Amino acid sequence: MRRAAPGRVQLNLALQGGGAQGAFTWGVLDRLLEEEDIDIGAISGSSAGALNGAALATGMARGGRAGAREHLAMLWEQVAQAGSLMTLLMLPLRKPGMGMWDDALPILSPCQTNPMGMAPLRFILNTVVDEALLREASAAPRLFVNALHVQSGAGRVFGPADMSIDAVLASACAPLSYQPVVIDGEAYWDGSYAANPSLWPLYEDQLDTDILLVELTPLHRAETPLSAKNILNRINEVASVSGLVSELRALEVINRNVPDADIRMHVLSLPDQPAGLLGTEPSIKRTVGRVLFEMLRQDGRRACDAWLAEHGGQLGEHSTVDVAQRYLRPHTQDWQQREPRQRDLALS
Image (cartoon, rainbow, N blue to C red; front, side, top):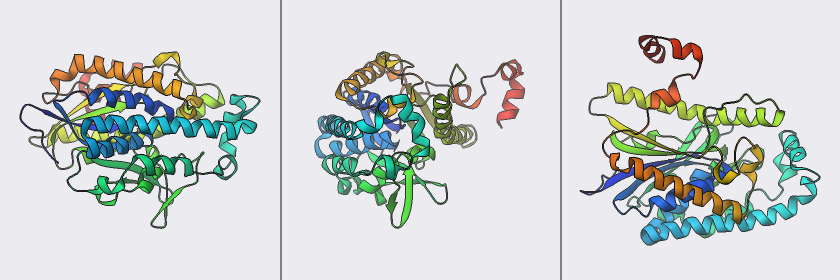
């Protein structure tokens, strides 16, 4: 993996999936690309994170930072257009209420709810993404996307050597919305169920590096869900972050036990209520529209601006998040009452 030039900082990006919430990540990336002294070395993304990563990497290869920002804007504009069409087509199914539609989703096949499959998204990616550029060894940043192998349940990371439009589509293939994407005769689903996203490609060949996780899926919730819809949403959230927690545990072990390892983690999180729109409502992830996307983009830009002001000067120096405290230690009263030594033994 390339190192940053003198006087510059190389930052690798881990981009989570989250449906329409990926527009928040668009805003984060849009603001980050304005920082001329920060070089984006590699990107690992799942689902919407894979879409953002593919658009950014293609745009960067074609036209530098300005090209990356243009391609991200192009992606979300076309998603908004396609989403408006799909909303019109699905109106007979969605009435009389969104809640009824959400409750029905778990028992309906994608063949019944979405006969068009991923054709609209494939068209968008064919317009925005250049898979040949993403496969070039000299391409910067390098892109890695995550998908779930349906038959085995194992995660797969597609890197530059096997990058394709199909790989990005597979990473965004929500099981209840789309039929699996088939690559070389094998079926794949949304990568966030396997890793949201994988971190190891970002440090595998360079143990002295900075990684920024743009977090869309919360690990902790203050309240226990009670409705069927919110219970299902919470189950999906836990499933999509469990792989990430395992990777963060491995990262902590490497930092503690491998000589000269210094993998510096940073986290920028989606606010609990960005633009007053989001929270625990599951259907927001399937909502599309220019107004929503633009509000989330502005939220992302503001969040990144604040993060850079507080932590930008610490890039290349040390982590700005306590990984063990935030992700690896249960937030329960019993755990907090343990002696520190007992906690460390439980984590080892």
